[in-house]
Image (cartoon, rainbow, N blue to C red; front, top):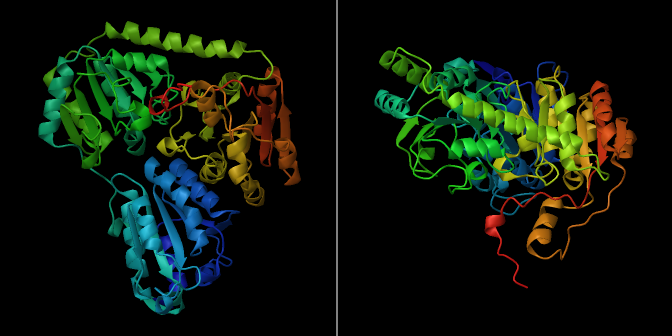
Length: 562
């Protein structure tokens, strides 16, 4: 037991969890905490230019490192600025601890300076939101915050700290994480595993959908072993292209919004679907049978029981850790049968799908028109990005080909806003990703509109010596919305067009490197040079404003009848 200030108790609680970075903007309500960071070498404060950027950086750090990200903001407007970033982490299942300052307990419920009910505000955006009522409970409640964020279906939590409790001295007992939480989860119930194994043995054309749970539980080896036993095609859920290596002969590609048509065709031809570590979410499936075939049995592995059968009825629900459940399935199958692999005749179809996809993607390399087609940009990235590169993407029509065209070999390589579709996410997330993996190339792909939402964070990248590369695909418009107006409202454009500065010059203003590309043959060289730079870089690429992808939510728009 040690006697210390409440501010130090916060920092020591973070240190016990091996937190390396805290992202945020300094505020007067947390000066006592900030003072404890002075001259520390084990935890670094990363001052950002906007609290939304801080949350996205913590998210990017968490996804690439596999650890809990931490961000901190002042009460009132600082906390409200957090909300977009925290909402992305919730739908992406990223483990974060968001810390906010709060007014003095003695002045609460009187509309005091910057007072809002922050606990209530964050409750629907997090797994757990709570205020620390007394200084001596800081270590206990921070332990619980990390426990909740990192266990089960991971996600963000929120801890609210009234400023007057930070003035107190407290007795603190610091514990190693192993003494108060265990992130390991076991396999699904043996009866469910037995039933699922029997269904797999009956299948002739099984297809496996690999989701986040495969990545979080480090289950790619087990999933590919099972796929090999069954000669099953493997497709990845929306935004989870990196959970299995794209070059594996059984991996066809991603499904969902802007996914690979070959992956969708493979899934549509299945006589059984094994959904491994995925909730079969909206942009993977659209909640209909355009992606997931109708009247086909589904086996669903999910660590969160409330997600089993939530979007599609299942033949067998397997509640448990993806890796442990896959191991259990493999053991039961090997005990039942001695001859493996099965369904080898299916391998020809899988190989054909992979060839079709490779040929389709290669065709984009021949798009030589000016202005540049966005697909040509992504085709060039396929050629120049290192195999272990980390790619962070925003939403948007010029960005959407990335979900289909970019392949990944290494895990924790593809960082997206997932079903939140948040613009302004990619660039700050790339800074957090670079801090998590400084030896790996990190690139963000942004539209012109989305980049300027958080482009100010280039100053953060410069100050923190994070040489990230930002691609800005500039079509001078809000492309996704313009696509709806083009395809459904007769080209009656309202609010869709933008004007922009030269983004390469924007980088140079902050001391970074800037590159400007308006011809397709120059894309690869510009990106390659940017990747070699020791400072943040922006590669502005002028893309065709008329090249708009089909809208993502065509099913939600009435056909124009005028």
